[in-house]
Every structure is written in C-alpha cells, then in structure tokens.
Amino acid sequence: MRASIRVRLIFSVVLLALASAVRAQAPNAPNAIDTQGLRVGRWTEYFDSLHTEVADRMAARYYRVITYLAGIPIGMTTDYYLSNGAVRWTGQLRSVRPDVAIGAVATFYENGVESSFGWMENGLLEGPWTFQDEEGAIIAEGNYATGLREGTWMVQSEEQVAGGK
Image 1 (cartoon, rainbow, N blue to C red):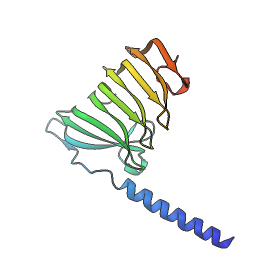
Image 2: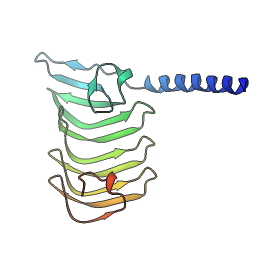
Image 3: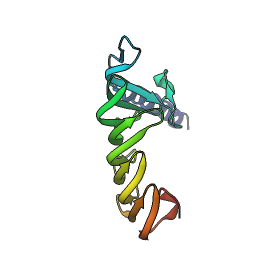
Image 4: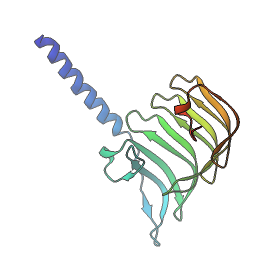
C-alpha cells in the first residue's frame, strides 16, 4: 500500500512539472502600445474560462496570438489551450472587447479535433456550419442567417449546436 502511495505521489509531481512546462511554452510578445495608447504589433493575451482577459497567465485557461495595427486586429488570430498548446480557435477579428469575427472560423476541442467550422459576418454566424463531436464525427450541419438557424438541419446532438433550436 505504501509503495502505491509513493508511486502516485511521484506521478502527481511529474504531471505537475509537465503541466508547468507546457504552460511555459506560451510565446512572449512585446505587447507594445503606441503614443496614442493603442495596441500595435504582435501580442500574446491570456484569458480565463469565461473569456475574460487576465494579467496573470497562471489564472488563464488559454492564450491568444494576435497582431494589431493602431488598436485594430489585423490578419488571422489564433487562440491556444494553455494545457497543451493545441489550437482552440482561429479566424479573423474585426474588433476585440467584444470580439467581432469575420470570415472563416474554426473551433477545436482540447484534444485537437475540430469542433466547428463556418463563416462569421460582423460577429454573427452566417451561411453553412458544421459541428463535430470530440472524435470528429459530424453531429450537426446547417445554415445560419444573421446568427439564427435557417432551413433544414441535420442534427445528432442539439446541446452542442450554437444558436439553439
């Protein structure tokens, strides 16, 4: 019994060390501010599970790599899970706080499998969307118009589909 507890303790310490090492892999960026107080250049931002930006990266669940020009996001933005560095979200943002996505957007589970893929227009789901479960099986497919479901949908699991019924 005592050996089993010792093995579990050693295993826990090793897992904690590995988790700390993975968390340390988040890139550091200059996070520069211009003379008008606007964000410029490449930034690494940290967020908690409620999507609130946090200064303490140990309180974060994921991080974002984003580039700004005069306070406006430019190019592709990617969010990563801190636990393993896997992509969480990728797309283009027109603005932040609140995030307003435009164009193609993909979300991913922590295991790296795509969760959803579709289009955003002014922060609203638009056009065809596909949703997958954590193994990659399609659980729903259909169209959105200005953020609301439209037309006929193929649905396997209602609770995992954005926009409700």
